Length: 271
Image 1: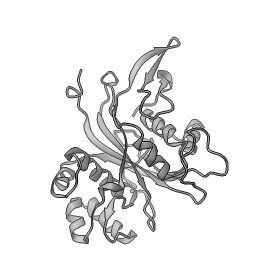
Image 2 (image 1 turned 120 degrees about the vertical axis):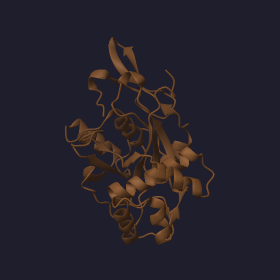
Image 3 (image 1 turned 90 degrees about the horizontal axis):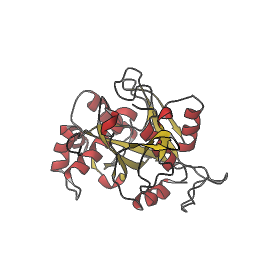
Image 4 (image 1 turned 180 degrees about the vertical axis):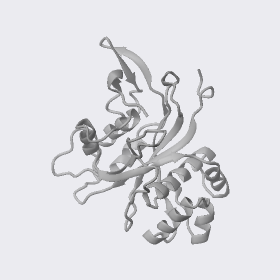
């Protein structure tokens, strides 16, 4: 079966990073960070238990790409492929809607203007119209491509998303807030801390989120992660089943920067 035979709905999600004072710009060895280095905090949102996709799970902000995202991408100046530009716009829009943060915006952006954008989006107005009204634009370069994931055909997922993952720096002077509809809670925490919480039963993460948190955990700053992302191709990750040591594992490629590339099927959490 080809990608075209089971194409998923395009989606985009953002790893929003907030550096801490002790962060260093040096790229560290991808091992455990020294105790004097505080890794960046990452914004995670908890999906409402009523949601059809990833109910109750901790995820990065994001959602599906819609026609308005494509329309806005088509009328803006950029050097990106149309699908890539639309995905970045979707990531920016969804982050405003879900977390009240204005990442990837150009112009005089403050907390009040982002809240006005959020109110307009919740009222059903297109992002492009809202940006025009407030004299703002899109800063495509603020989002760094990090990964792309798509469920494997054998998983027979009820909702199949072809999801692009991006890195973005948390904007200064803005405070994230939960939308209380799709999401019920948000938290800032390091990738390692999120993994530890979930391993202790204090949260739930699905397979792609776990793999991406493991990949994020060794780095000390947003700049380090941008450099790391540039060192690996962004190829579509399509997990597969494989017998390893007499047990079925869910596996991913080993050349895309992920430190853990398989997990026993009995442990895998799906959306």
